[in-house]
Image (cartoon, rainbow, N blue to C red; front, side):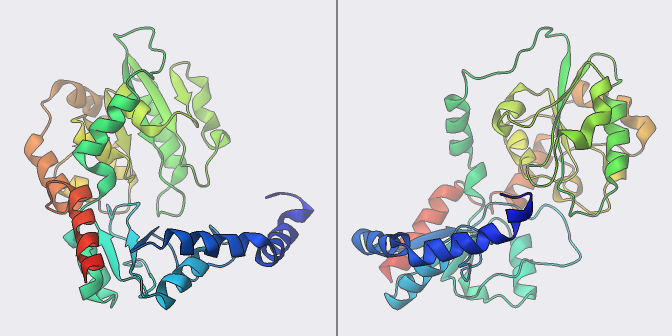
Length: 318
């Protein structure tokens, strides 16, 4: 329904059907039956009440929580890995608490006048080592076909197009990477706004794969080198101790992993092959990896999952 003449009409019809159906009533009945002591939302706008904007029912649940004096908290799904001109995200002040990953994000939000007493720096649970290890065990039997183990695999996670960079120059660079002897290049387009056709020029390389479907954790565990401009998925690569190849010359943004030295930098197009060799031959910069993770991913916590849950229990106890 995202194409053709119904693309504008369908959301209105859906909204009407949902709002007038038993679905809304059943949603509220279910919430009352559960009677939660706390409600946690992903990073969303609590005013969302339209199926064409996002998951429908958020506002109904938030309104129930407010009328019943239940705390509503917001959980992070992304990380602040680059400096953007527009500063911090604009989020509703109706949350009882927002859980964020770093002091850097805290400063951003404080400068954007978000109530500081509602912010908790707990780290990103998604990259808690215990969760990454559990995920690794769950997918241990899944792998990609690698016929020649002498070939080294570089996995590149594309950046969504809203960021300020020249997409065609990125394709030029990937074109260059794909010609390096002994390298297999896997490119995963960004799930929002990119398709295989965006990378069609790379298809002429037999050793280049455009992979839209394999989950990122599997690709990361198949990689000898991971690369991106700015994508939070690379944090899992750093947690696992894989080399991170960063084409700095393509990016107009300053990134946290570059500032902390947790990557091998490509300064110019012609330095590409030498940088790849460095990734394969040099030791992992463990101190830089640890510094990056502590400051920008884990919020100084041993376990972001534990820190987040403990703070939720304190809120409920109040």
